[in-house]
Length: 296
Picture 1 (cartoon, rainbow, N blue to C red):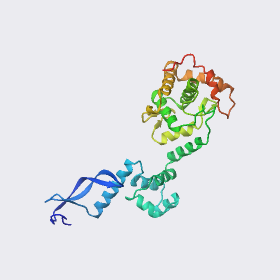
Picture 2 (spheres, rainbow, N blue to C red):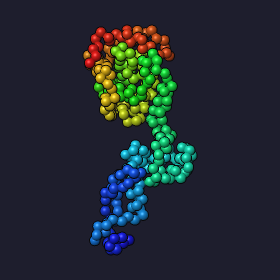
Picture 3 (cartoon, rainbow, N blue to C red):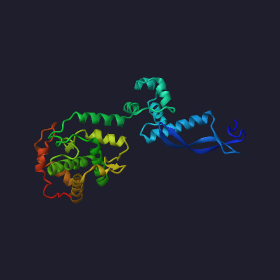
Picture 4 (cartoon, rainbow, N blue to C red):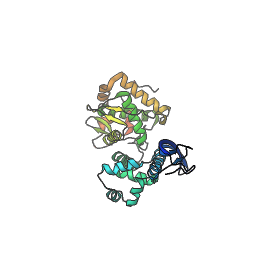
C-alpha cells in the first residue's frame, strides 16, 4: 500500500488518536493505522478500518448508555447461543445481531429490549417497577407511590452507615418510612410493610436487595450483612427527607441494631396487623421512637 498523499510506500503501523463524527456526535478513539514515514499522512487498510468503525460506534454507545458490541456479544455467548439462535431468542432478524456486534448502533428501544431478554437484574428491576406502578398511593404506601430509585438510595445510605444484615436493615427501613409519615403525612419511599416473623419488612425486599447485588450496587457477605459498592445519591433527598435519614441513623448509633429490632416487635402497627396484610401508616402516630428521635 502506498501513501495517498505523496505516493511513497514506506508506511509503519502506529496507534493514533482519531476524532470521529458518529450520529452528529464527536467522539475520540485510539486505534491502529498506517502512517507515512515521509509526510506523516495516515491511511487504513480494511482490517484497521473495521477496528476504527467499531471503536467509534462503541465509544458513542458508551457515551449514550447503550450496550457496546462486545457487551451484546457477551450476552449471546453467555447464553451459549449462535447468532441465529440469539436472533430467534430476542425476536429480531439475524442480520440485526450481526450489525449490532459490528459497528451498526442499536436505538434505545432495541437496547432496552436486549437488556430485558438478557440481563436478569435489569429484567427484575423492570418487573418491580411495573409491579409497583399498579399499586395505588394509599394509606398502606404512606400516601406515596413507591419509588424504586429513592428506595435504592435509602438502601445505599443505610448499608453504607451500618453494614448490617437484612434482618436489621428491614427495621431501619420501617422506621425511616413511618417516622417520615409521622413528620410530613407521607412516607419517604412509598414502600408497603408486612408484619413478618422477624418484624416489619418492606414488600418485595428480597427481590430488591438481590437485584441491587446483581446490579453491582451491593455486596452480600456470608453473614448476610451488606457492603455498599457505590455511594448513595443524596441529592435526590430534600432537607426533610435527609433529616429523617439522619434521625434514624442517630437512633441506630445510640441504641444499636438489636434494641431497634426488639422495639419494632412492640410497635402497635406490627402487633395489631394480621399476617399477609400491610401495616397501615396511621400507626405512625403510635411509634415508640417518637419521644427520643429529634428531626435534624
